[in-house]
Length: 124
Picture 1 (cartoon, one colour):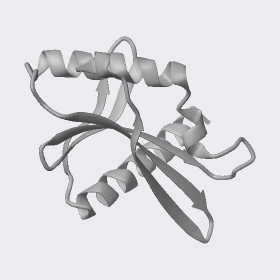
Picture 2 (cartoon, rainbow, N blue to C red):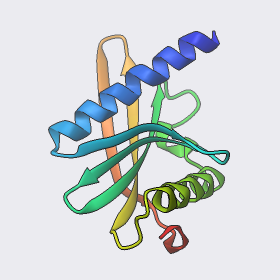
Picture 3 (tube, one colour):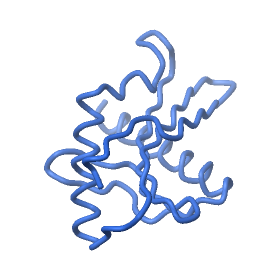
Picture 4 (cartoon, rainbow, N blue to C red):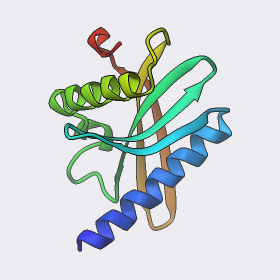
């Protein structure tokens, strides 16, 4: 079961990366891990560094995929983003946090993109 979840997650992170690339983004990192959180995708949108959380679901039984990005999860991602910025020695760059929600059904895959999904200036 865990391997099915991992495969499902990896497939949808790939879908999100392709979606963003088609919109002109450049993917810089995938699955950036820290002790606090994992950032699914880190991309560039023009001059803006974008930290992307990807959430996918097969049904809406447990709510919209984006609803899984709780304030607690946001804080963990913000902390991980601060570590990325420090490791890359980036101090003067516009940053934002996006969520990609993917609805996977047998006959359809729907991708929703939520730019500026959450903001915390402490991350910069």
